[in-house]
Image 1 (tube, rainbow, N blue to C red):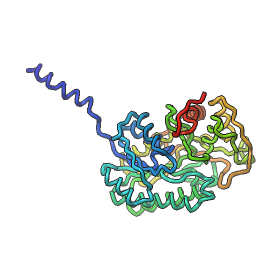
Image 2: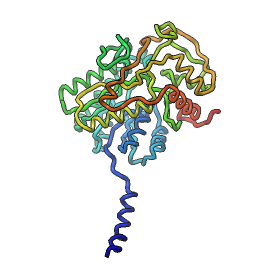
Image 3: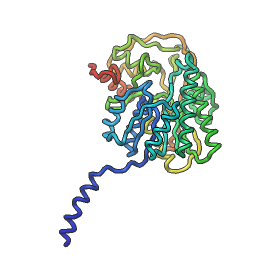
Image 4: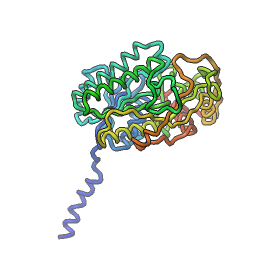
Length: 371
């Protein structure tokens, strides 16, 4: 009798070990095919969550989603892509109706270049603010109250003191920063009107780097608006030289100083934020995500020279409108509230960037190894 019971249990044990486990939760990730979104999706999948990506592909491509699945060894059912613009209310509603298990949202979708925002302010106000409002309305109708917002250190404007903590005065020196600041205010007002909302506003500083595998990274369309992809494209020979905007700032070498954070650390910060929201009520709070260390433009260039073994020609030119001299954070609140700290230094940021760029000199469009 005992042997019969044992042999009858074998198929059940095999089924238990082979059957896929249910996801901890289902998360809507807007802009999930983009640079920060793709890395965050990998970390969400590693935390056993199901990911629903909504992206209009205006600054991303579907190849990134294939690589997310590959890195995380995830099934198509656990990382689902739906094309759409968050400003399209009907499309957002369709996606939420298709996946009723969605319980949280991480909102990345939006335009993100400081310099471009100065020349195209109306596009930034329309895309970023209208998109956030449309998304929040749809989530509210579905009673989805856990919300992580991708904000930015630009909401601090020209900082009054360094390092910058979350209590620093809020302002902005460019339209991009103002869209982030306005959305933060919208979120605070939304929470004040309905305390069922559970919101974390992540003010991150300067994301750089790539996944250590070299399979996903920053792939801007056209001329890069951010520093690191431009530097890496010069190193790989795609561009002739780098323009350094501003060499007369009150900084050690005259170039702008920023708090560069590895994108994988940043992605893990989003997972920590979601963990916190799922634990219980946090209200509506802002949290800095950064290393707390300032690095100048020229120090970053030197780091990439060492990582790549390539020359990176550059010219010093005028300051760029909307930029500030120095900006780095006090990350204490992230450690205390989320249990999160940045672990990767400048060397890893540069090494991983070079691995991505040298393996993908044309981004996701064409894979070609460069020696």
